[in-house]
Amino acid sequence: MLPKTSLKWGIVLGLAIVVGTQVLTWLGLGLSIWFPVVTYLSVIVFVASGLRDLKIRQAGKLTFLNAGLAVLIIILISRLIFQIYMFVYINYVDPNWVNTVAESWTQRMQDADIPADRIEQIISSFRNAWRPVNVFTVELLMYAIPQIVLGWMVSLLFVFRKQKMTGPSGNSSP
Image (tube, rainbow, N blue to C red; front, top):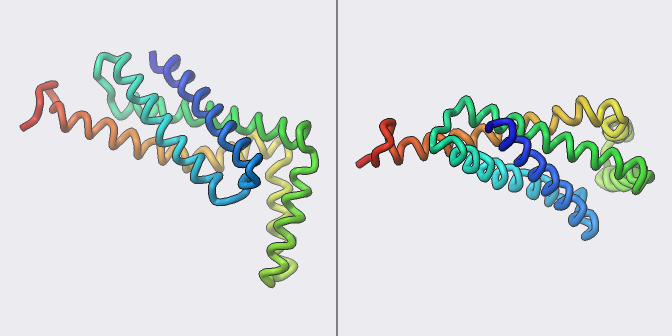
């Protein structure tokens, strides 16, 4: 029950983030503040939906342990889907993407009078982040961890809010 539900919602979240990213890219907003906004809102919405689904499948009994494990699975699957999308995108769809972004960022930082050595450090880190090994290890985990924490916060609210409303015996609290 938990693995199947978590897999389903992990795939749904991963695809939602991919679609959101692609729409933002088409609108020219892929590297704007809108990317993290879309990503984190998607995490909140789809983790809550997954937990609701899991609670229904478990006849209303959802512990924080089960919710936390579900969140972990959902986020890791969604991140893996997104990282695969980005790998395909930067290697086959738009192989110049990393260079284009690096040039754009370099120009913006130069315009902001950021020291050349700092610019080089930032651009080097950016380029390294998109190497295949890093895409599927460091970057996957670097972005998964805050999303897992956010998902756990949602699950805390979800589990304890519902528990408080129904009470430990299942009866309504006064």
